[in-house]
Length: 193
Image 1 (cartoon, rainbow, N blue to C red):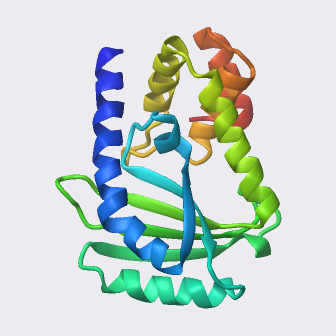
Image 2: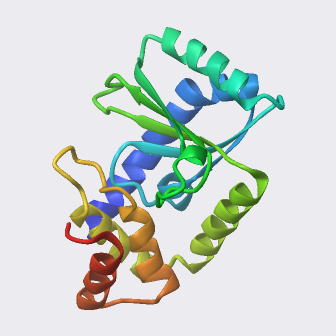
């Protein structure tokens, strides 16, 4: 377990540098942002960053275009994928636009930043849920979460879709502590993994 905590701390430290050098300068040019997810909770098991972005203009599509153009000029950006989840109502993802930015290896880590643009209500719900999870975290639940998130790493060494959220729900919201309870909850939420 100690190794998982060391890895999470290592990734968090490296992510802070990555955020400040590679992501924040671009986002601050076009608006404001809040970091959520495993970075905000200090529960990282792979180099991934989740961000709630608020454009400084009404026309979010125009901002996304300009931001994408700037990011694609960055020598470390490998690819950008845009998904409009407003047009995909039958999905587990919240409504909004997601810009998935994949980076070339930076100091041997291949980062991915998911930059979300969502309505105010969705953003407030996400931030409130993150704060609730932060308040519920204890050393024992942190270790348990890291163990289960590591078990959910796929063959690309990334947590399966919706895996982290399901683990947080099982342990922090439902209070499951035993492996059998957590596994049953995860199977119900995620299917086979």
